[in-house]
Image (tube, rainbow, N blue to C red):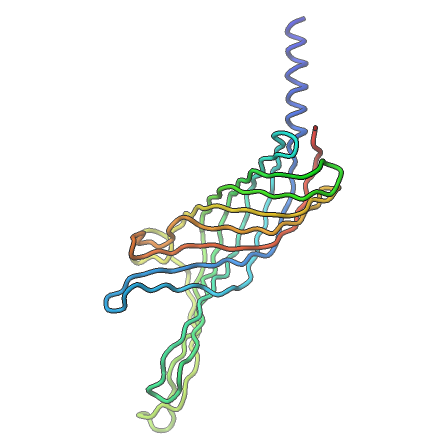
Length: 242
């Protein structure tokens, strides 16, 4: 008899626990950014920030109820970051002026975020949601493409007639050697605010800030940090047991 009672109790507990877990897809637009800091001989410390360019993210979410209004939310996501750098090339001595050069670092990564989430009200009504927590990500592939301005010459090979753009493209190299472009692993903190409808459909606006150094040299004189923001839409299947 005691074994039967124990079995029933465990079954009810597992059913209740499972009922508190909801799953669903989430996807949206994401603007990834980078800040590169380096120290160069004769030039001092330089900081270069990327410009906004659209990317996207998509994945799956697990939503675990901890207590009324408090949840633990995690998941696994694919991120496409479209990192855009723009700087000027000085052609003033040729009478052309300063010319723009654009470089894109396009990376593919997997990210695992974890949020402690607050939801106002109760399930079955529209409610505001907010969460914050850590994340870890792994960059597994990418490429670098650039439109590099080059001087052009007319009939006189000694006289510059203008400039044109030469396009280049290659795969990014990941690792910790001086010949590599970026490291694979990154970590940081992320947060979001949003709205969850009475049927499980939700909208989010989020922000992430990387704490890891993506520079392969990983020194105080060479730092690459990532951050970004985005908006997303998702849907949670299942019901709370509160």
